[in-house]
Structure formats: C-alpha cells, structure tokens
Length: 288
Length: 311
Image (cartoon, rainbow over all chains, first blue to last red; front, side):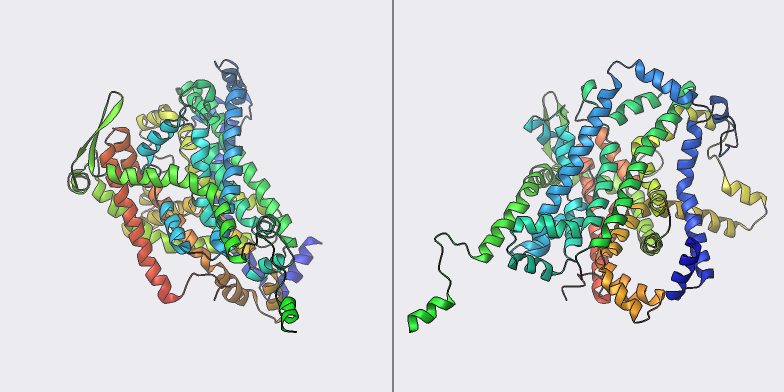
C-alpha cells in the first residue's frame, strides 16, 4: 500500500522512478561511507578480544559477547569517585549550557533580525567575525578572566562560555530574518507584548533552527572534558573519565571499544529524537 | 467645534506614555543584554587581550606572566622561521587555504543536494539524517582518542607494518593501473572522506532552512504544475540562498579548526609560547576573513544572499 502511494506521488511531481532509484543509490553510497565508522565501532564493542585484533578486520563479529561491557562495568565499579557523579556533571553542563544558550542567543537574535536601531549591522558584523576565531585564540586571556571571576574548578567555567558563544545568535538571526514582518505586526496590532510575540510567534516559527542549534550545542558539550578549567576529580565530566579508561594498554582494547560505542551512541540517539521532532512540528506553521 | 474634532483624532494621553519606537529600542536592549554581557566579558575582552599578546613575548613566572614587547616579532617568526618536525606553519597555512578553497564549492553543492533528498518524505528519515551526522560526532577529539584505541593499538599495528587498515593505493598498484589514475582515485576517495566529515553540519543547516521555506509556495507551484526540478531552482534555492552564507562561514571555520594549522597553534599554546600562538591564530583568522571577503565580493556580483523577503 505504501509503495503505491509513493508511486502516485512521484508521478504528480513529474519525476521518474529510475531517477528516484538513482538518487537512492547515491544516498545509500554516501550513507554507507558515513555510517561505516559507527558500524565498525558498534561491532567492535561486541567482539571478543581475540577478534578485535584480526586482520583484515571483520565488519560483523563472529561470536557476539557482552564481555567488553562487563569489563567496563567492573572498571567503573572500582573507580575512586562514584561513576554516577561523572555522569551527573556532564548532564549538568550539557543541559544548562544548551538550554541557556538557545534561549539567550535567540532572545538576542530577535532584535537583530526584526528591529531597526542604529549600529545594528555593525553589531551583526562583529558577531560574524567572532565566529571565525578558534578557541585557541582566546585560550590564555579567557583563562585569566575566568580565574579572575573565580570560576576555576567550577562547572560554570564551561557553561558560561558555551552560553555566550555567537554561533546560536548568528544562526537564529539568519532564520528569524525570514519571518514575514506582517506576522509580527499583526500580533502587535492585536495587542501582544514584545515578550509574547517572541515566545508565541517567533520561536515556534523558527523551531527547525533551534532544534538544529540544540543538536550542535549538545554535541559540543557532551564531549567536553573540563579542559584546564576543572581539576577536582569529583567535578570532571563523563568524557574525561571514559578517556582515562580508554588510555589503557592492549588488554583494555575491548573496554575501549565499549567506551567509544557509548560515547557515540548517546549523541546519535539524541540527534534522531530531535530530528524526528522537526518532522512533527512543521505541519502547523503560521505562514498562510 | 475645532476642539472636539481634535479630541476625536488624538487619543487621551496617558501620563507615562512611551513612544512606540522608544519602547522597541528598550525591548531590543532587554533582549540583547544577557547575551551581550557574556559576549563582552568572555569573548570580546579575551580577543583584544590576545591581539595584544601577539605583539608580546610572554613568559610564565611564579604567580604571574611577564610581558615583553617585541613588535611584529611573533608574526615574522611564524612565517619565516617556524618549523615542526615535518612541516612548517607557512606550508600548512597555504595547504589548508588551498584545500578549503577546493572543498568549499563541492561541499556546498553536496550538502544542499543531500539536504534536499533528506527532506523528502520517507520512512526512518531521522535515522538516515543521523547517519550523515555521524562524521561530525566522530571528528570530536574525545571520541577520536577512544576510537584510536589509545596509542597502544596504533603502535602494535605499526610494528606489523600496517599503518592503514586498508591500503587502497597498494591494492590499486597491484591491479596494474596507471599511476595517474591511481592518484586520481586515491585523491578522490580522500576528498570524499574530507567532505563527508565536514558536511554534517552544513546538511543540518540546509535542512533547517529548507524546512523554513513557507509551505504555500510549494503548494502554489504544484497547482501551477511545476516539476520537481523547477520547484528546486525557483523555490528551494532562492529561499535557501541566505543560508549559503551561514554554511560558508561555518564550513570555512570548521576546515581550519580541524586542519593541521590548528594543531600547530595548539602545540605552541601547550609549549607556553603564548605570544607566538596568538600571532599564528590571528594570521589564520585574517586568512579566513580574506577568503570570506573575496567570496562576499563574488556573491554580490552574482546576487546571492540577503533575505528573500526584504527586497
């Protein structure tokens, strides 16, 4: 049944079935290129140790085993700091950083996109330029300032710079600019406050944009290891702890595979969830 | 008579009435402020400090950093004298710039193409989208360390003379192909990987921008009998074009961030040559700005970018 629907739909769009197959093949080819590392990591995680060192490597494990995860659990159980603590740290940094950045950057983007005030374009140019600086550029002065505020060895030292980054502002501004002015004006005439316009008109309209932004921020913060800002063991994030485990020798290879699998599967799952949210929401857009 | 007419046209004045324009500015400031504070303290200020550092020789001493002004010394050193074990800053900078310029158009076309396809309705498309995002996750340092299996495994493989798991070039030589063709194929596959690993975020950005195109435009086009091909060129592309700029900026920065230039800078940073690393960072930032300025001129002459609705 589904196939039939698909066919009639393509005919209406005047596209050939052959063309669709061709497109599908291209997508599949590049998709395979992209997915290969994940498949490899996943299968490595379930391989017994001897199979990990097979050459040439096999794509699928011959004897599936959970041995690697069992080893990992044992290692975690023996760690000095309870492992849930690392997890909590990462969760805190990721959630607060992502949510904070999305809200604050979107709020800042709104006037830049829709208000007219002097210095607007200059301000925006500044933002664009600031996007081009690598973290290394500001590493040393940044450290001095953060330590000056007294945030060293505090998760805030990771969260605040993430919130203040200009990526979100840039992204949200570009998308808000596409909202027709008439929509905002009509809300204004109906008596909505600027605050209300922002939260009930503008934000729902740019949902694809901020869902994308959430993915980018989550991915960025999920892998943070605290860098030079956090040195207390009980404040270190998860990726630091897992990396310590991964730095073992050959007999740890299985555990390493399990660790990489966990580190990868969380952002991938998160991505799938938030991308499927985009599909659901876009049907009731206000543009008519 | 005159008075009553005036009363009708001008509404009764409230005591603290703020003109619409002023209230808009006030709201603008309220919306901008939280971000501004963070931006200035955590970005703008460090930025100017780092620009200043690039003209100084910084040496860490107990409790503080001593600064010594050396003018353009750091810049001159970075260009003329700096060498690493197998390369130099100058060489890597040129290589990365050339690479970025070659990759950029391919990357833009490729990611727009994939984004358009991923925007079609089919089962499990969230999963397929995720597949194209995997390289981005893989590119992050923490995962790479874990994936590399630590140095132990790499050392073991090297001992056995296997530096790459699958040596394509070697395999192709054995099939008796001409060297030019082999070089081409190997180069192509390398580039596919380079572009795939950069394309994750551009695809996402394009996807979001395609989803922001008003649906009624497509409906109207469909009713008028436009083909998929026409819909793409006349509706999708013009509406997506403001975001081409976004993607270009992101892709350029990303190229440089994952390049060996960035590695050299981090290396100098870790060796506590802070002045030198600041100078190098500023050199590469100026390179990116230069490229973007060039592209901006090109874009203007081809009328790409700018909001579709504001015209």
